[in-house]
Image (cartoon, rainbow, N blue to C red):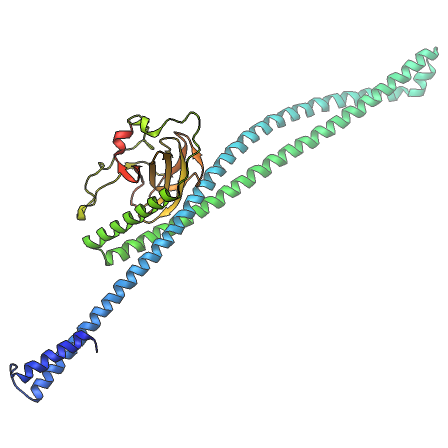
Length: 386
């Protein structure tokens, strides 16, 4: 018997023994049984609610993991679509070049047709006289030899002209086929990628709605604060792990120390700032360690300084997160991206596109969350960025 139930039963027995309850005997036993039944029912309800709450939290965790997979896939699709769009642009330029070549070939074909027609008419007219008759009319052997050479020359010229014409037609057909095949393949690939993107977007929206519904069933200020604290703790642990695993950067000769750039850095995106560094984040005394920058989805996020990518993955509370190490203990963080354009270990220069703005991690609106850290401690980006 659970301790709470035993205590309640003992409490009722003592009351009955002391005569503190009205009635006696069978009546007291009935009330005791009723109280025990009510206590049993209450205990069952508490256990049921606890199980439901635990189940909801478990499902929430599962859905967040599914959301992570969906957003990682979406980011990958965005990169593939961007690459495919670039390929389509290159193919369009190639098609334009092929079109110009096709026009040249068509003009050459038309000119060759006219020349062949002229040669055929000349051959027909010469055939009317007869080659043998022409030769027999010649009085001098030298004249006959010149005539034979003349005929051989035109014979070979006509053959070359016909061969050139056939080559032109074959090249023209090949150019047309190449253009049509390349355009069809790229358009089909683009259609496939766009269909996959729509599918992942729909899946992400569905999962976000489910997450919102599950979160609402267990939401409270305390729970929200606890979630924020867990997310921040996970980020802090990640940063500590990065610092411990860090090796010295291979700095370029033109590298300018991060500390000397104070007040001169460009913001990673042009956007309205949604908060102030250190301002309250809500209940519980939590404060913002960075700046939220409002920007359109898909906007390029650029590196603020020379750095190496030390993290590029999905993190709960931050969505698709990219972290740059700038040396001398300085790091910059870029969260809630739509896609990540760089991989861990890659070196980037100031202004290099490293990601695109999104709302991964459960945001309602697109935007970039941006932090700068020195030795793991957040510093005000406003002091560093112009």
